[in-house]
Amino acid sequence: MQVSFAKNAKDATPLHAVRAADLKAWLAKRPKREQAYLKSVEFGAKDGELCLIPDAQGALSSAVLGLGKGEDILAFATFAEQLPAGTYRFADVPAAQGGANGALAWALGMYEFARYKKPKAKGAKLVLPAGVDGAEVVRIAEGIFLGRDLINTPPNDMGPEELAAAARDLAKKHGAKFSVIVGDALKKANYPLVYAVGQGSDRAPRLIDFVWGRATAPKVTLVGKGVCFDTGGYDLKPSSGMLAMKKDMGGAATVMAIADMVMGAKFDVRLRVLIPAAENSVSGRAYRPSDVFGSRRGLTVEIGNTDAEGRLVLADALTEADSEAPELLIDIATLTGAARVATGFELPPFFTDDETLASDLMRHSKETQDPVWRLPLWRGYESALNSSVADLNNNPDYGYAGAITAALFLNRFVSNAKSWMHLDIAAWTDRPKPGRRKGAEATAARALYALFKERYGVKL
Image (cartoon, rainbow, N blue to C red; front, side):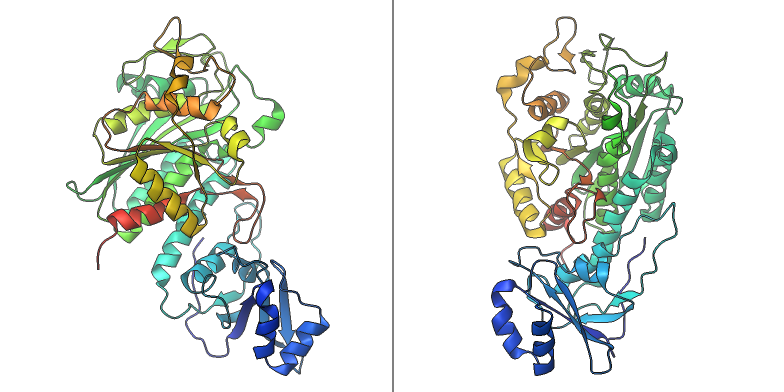
């Protein structure tokens, strides 16, 4: 989905916005006709309250949005979602919601997944606010849309092959070097855990890999879980748990969204993206509880639960990423239900031993309102990963702290990277807000892009 803005401000309908606490003073500054109309409809500036104000002939003369407490910097997405066709401009609006935030909110509010149905006609256009970098707004919005589209696509049209094709298209768009290892070749190339998870499906697993940027630039590597559908394997999920499993490749979609932004902005990084893609199916070829497999790192892993497959595919990909000793290594995955129990869908946890990285991400998370929350890599739980027959068990012998023990498992496959971080995301919005409708989301992509921009953005 492409994002664009109106170029001509002539005759654009003005858009206003006001916090509830400021309504009385704000109304006093408005023309008497507007005051009278807003009072007649009992406009209270409640959060999300949109009022269309007619002129003397009944045509739309302006619109005003209630901001409630004024806490949501993406509130203006409501304009894009609800206004009729026409050209609009921001007029009397608070600074926090206006400018670049308002333009991005508008863009995010235009999103629609319409691959399988006729798209709704969207005739509303916004004049880009003065001083706003339109290319940057478009870059962020279209990156988010890429992630959302990939996650929203049902599994019959988004298997490992289709995910690889989408990554190939992205690499081609930005001139990145692309490669993929498929099926039995994974065993020969020493990715035994990726192969094991995908061996039960007729859709061959694969390791997707692309590299972009000058070779001597700081190395940043993103690893995204690409389990395109997860039945749970022999430890079968209930039907209710399987319904949302098209989003189990949400980590892969999110790293692709970030990569699209970073490459489009031409940051000074040597970016590598690794996506282990597989379908966790049930068949006579599928891996079983109690199986033991080697890993790319050389550690052996006992399968305590076939539904803990994400950490397995990530382990091999992380080992490869770590072999280059990148300056920054980040993996993103829809990894555990325990993370959702701990912090919910809206506040995905992340794990790192790098205090500066943690502080920087939290700051950007707050500024972009793309929330994350740090949980500890508590080493006291390391023993829960022990196995009596192998180096590790993928199903910890401890009924609590599942997100932490999963992060500790992944950490066993990272030793050379200067800095490593793991994000356990939902890749889904369960409580919609303006610009963030219920459904797929490239969780934390905006916050991480802001972090990369601060560290690696080209200085003008």
